[in-house]
Length: 422
Image (cartoon, rainbow, N blue to C red; front, side, top):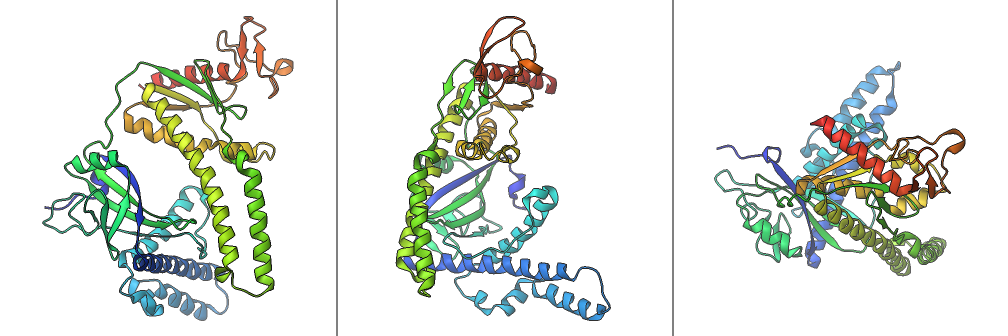
């Protein structure tokens, strides 16, 4: 019987756990990350050189021979290993090389689909390391979390290719749920070391059972207007304050970055390699720690906020935000990035699908300028500016709080959009 692939499963879920490798396992992770980066960069280098030839010239025979030789270099994994013999090391997972080749092709596919994604670029060596691998299920083995060469041993230990047994820590509640499910297939596994020297394993999971049970219907609906003054205002009149995590840490982070820059300059003047300069590494870790604190606090806030909204409402409506265009305004760019709007909308999207709720985005045009009671649009001399936080409709005389009025308009448009879809 042919085994199911990941695309054949009805539900997909991503699980990220922290792993605690030994010193030998850390060396293995580094070798595999270096191998994946080397293979990816070889593909980038070969295709850049081929692209530089451009149109055919009088030296057509030489060009064709050179292009043929370049393509031969990356044609197979064996050809890559012949060029770089260290890729044959016993610690290197063959699937890390295969995934690097596949990721290069995906990067080109992404560029052709979304042009602003950019073409594949050279990956520099940095403090962040990662590679991908895949489990291998035997033909006669039942598909589960416990039957492949990459499997869970218990709630504290994993078995991973080349790394063998390794301790991990994850959500006990989610692990109990996963272990109780009948059939869960493990897909791509990403092993990562971050800038703070912490190690993580991310699993792509597939199943025909839902990973999270749908929440009961509440018959509640809410519209949300995202803004810079506050994080958001909703159609019920509630306003959520903006935590501004980056601005709180900005001065301390700037001082740490300035100190790091001075240490790098000093190390270069003394002709010391930066990787061997202990004071540089010590300060780099401090900068990475401060940056990670901002990101983690913001992410935790966005997770808690999005989960509460989705669980407590059957319909959540927001405006369509084009962050790339908004960031062109240099006066607002820092505040927009500090809010994490794009991440927030992404969380609402996938959590609505997980919990069986509706999340709708609408065109934001004139949501602020339109009176939600009578529909009059403020324009010309009456047009509202960013300074106008409250206003009174000249037609019906109703007094509005700017962002709450916009949220009500967003909800009305979302309900109309949802009705037209059904």
